[in-house]
Image (cartoon, rainbow, N blue to C red; front, top):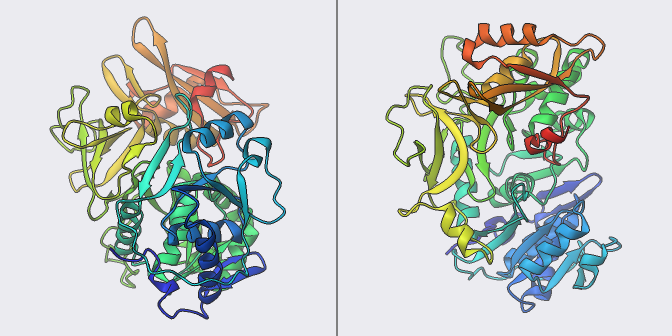
Length: 493
């Protein structure tokens, strides 16, 4: 049993731990404030909710709960009343932690409230909480029903952050900048708890913007975390913003996650900055599973860095993670050849323990021998690199006897100059089983590319059986708050 945050008790007192805009806390101040929260919630019960606004208070509240050995339930401030009511009824937190003055909706207002004082004075307690105890209960997006609460043990948080430290050579000297929400694994676990576990610093932008990225990287930040929507905005801004390109070129590590980053954006960023974006892969129930490994750039142009990021892949399994691809009958894919599609299944210390109050869903998520069924489908290269092709339920298209991943078609479509955004789905076809449908946001709505033009474009890059048979134009693709395309909503578009 070891502390999740050794730097809080390890003498890093004057180093800045957190900065949100013009507000910041050193490790000494964070330890005192989180220690005060821990004293207030220690005897409150097994769980406390945290009103997870992008502020210092959220970080202090979550750290305080973890110091007390109490599970934190991050609440999305943008959730509707019905969703909030379900989450609170399901998780039954004893209290809600919130920033002073934060207005809470009726669904939350009935709970006992603790205002988080970032200037509070308390003591960092000795960490005696067993590693198997819950650290967080994070609710899934609920695309197939009410959100399920994934119970994430302390062991999983530590294992994931330590595996990423190994893969990325992440140390206390690193300064991370991001503008991610704090109620998801990406922004909270990786983006806040990650730097704190290493003894490093995090600068939160509050709201993502390329100006803020430029400023922070120019002022010493070494790492940037973002989602594909953010990197797309960066790629769009680069041609007219040489200062942004220079700032990104100074970064040690650019990381994208939460959804696939289109290859076109990868290449545009690399060409303008000399830096390749690393994609990592994970989900709420597993935390992080795969990533490319970071190695210092070699000045000799003929030397290829070990683990160099490859556009369109999420790298290799992290230390401690077992990963396999399986066929529909549950047998393992016979050959890792970069072409054969299978569902990803995983085992390791990074996994959640259960869906809260849902033993049926928990049992259904695992095989008899303990592999977690991710529901994602991928191909794997002979050297272990993994390329996600989509979700089994929405992105695996069975057409004309072929199993086709939507992701590679989307990447091909985005290489067409007339396409600004693209999503691909399947729909029933009496002859093919399913036909490929492309949903397009055209660059010029007055002159969109024709269906024949796009079909030929895809067929030249991939294979004829992967060309879209139907093209539908939209003003915008439906996305959630992490920038993921909500494909189930496309049928209503």
